[in-house]
Amino acid sequence: MRLLAGTDKGLIIYQWDGHTWSVQAIHFLGMPIGAVYSDPITGHCWVAINHKHWGAKLHRSSDGGRHWDEVAAPVFPPHEGQTVKSIWTIRTGPGNRMYLGVEPAALFVSEDQGQSFRLLPALSGHASRDKWMGGGKGSKDPFLHTILIDPDNTAHLTVGISCAGVFQSWDEGETWQPTNHGLVANYLPNPRADVGHDPHVLRISCQNPSVIWQQNHCGIFRSFDKGLTWIDVTDSNKNAVYGFAMVIDESDDQRAWVVPAQSDFLRIPHHNALTVYTTTNGGKDWHPLTSGLPQLDSFDLVLRDAMDKQGPHLVFGTNNGNLYHSVDEGNHWQTVTQNLSTIRVVSLQA
Amino acid sequence: MITVEFTSVLKNFFPTLRTEYLEAGDLQSLVEAMDRKYPGFSNYITEDTGNLREHVHIYIGDIPIRRGSDLREKLAPSDKVFIFQAISGG
Image (cartoon, rainbow over all chains, first blue to last red):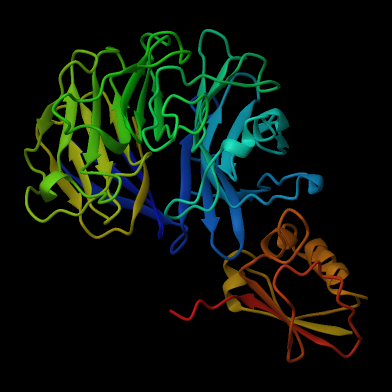
């Protein structure tokens, strides 16, 4: 098994020998990795680099990450008057379709496996756009960070935009509507507004694609109808509330793992104790998992794509460059390294 | 011929990059000429709008080009152009 860690200073590839991790390769040394994605159909591996000076760039490997070629990154049409500042997420669909979510919030599609891209303008030009917000730490604009493709109907797309909410299309991205019913944005004058929500990350169940989980700015939500409506499953003990990262079980849509922070203001673990919370009953109860994790003086925050799961293996990386691995679904953790830069993405590959 | 020099940082992305001597009437046509020699170069220098990237600097001789320029600045054959990344001062 391999582990790809996308950091602010490069892509580090680790190899697992059954007992320990060793660094297999380092690519893009010194460069800020924005997204990492392995296409399960073509086997291509994609990396986005969000250069501060030179703009967002896209790279592809066809040999498992040994060699990389830069391909043309998407650009806004000139009349849009916008520039792609960063690429947040990459997903591929059936056929040759490939989607990129970017900042400022927009969705680009490629129909030739990434050789060229076109903007899907109905989303970025949505009638609600003037109600979208951005401007958080590290971001000046709203941005599109999650893309879900419905395995039952690949024309059905679901995206997460911070801060706007969940939007869905049933015609391959040509038209869109917000689907945020049930979410609560307690920072808005109207917390149940149609748009203005902050869905930090969305995860769709492989076993039951009708179920979508959401780690939101204001709690944890779950949908049973493919993201049309949302039910609040936030931890009643108020431990698992605010956070970014979330993974769900591949074969049980009741199980999820999150790494919450104390608050949106502090963005550190509760009482400086780094803790994973898990549920086995669809969010009715949340339980702490702490064995092997620092329970004193931790200031770690786990970013939205910095957690992954494959079978019993769970891994997450933090904004302080700490990387942790569990072989038993989070019951015990081992430190892989404490010496990386900010970890933005981790990806486990069998 | 206009002399075009670069920060060595750009060699990370264009390993064969070297000082170039080009003919161009303005900065935009110079960047386009560079893009023909080094495909993809213009996307490193300009935003999607075609304007100079916010954190890229271009000097013509000792004169800095303003941030966000549309690169219509005229060039003379004896000009020396230098392209480099903005230094944050930290």
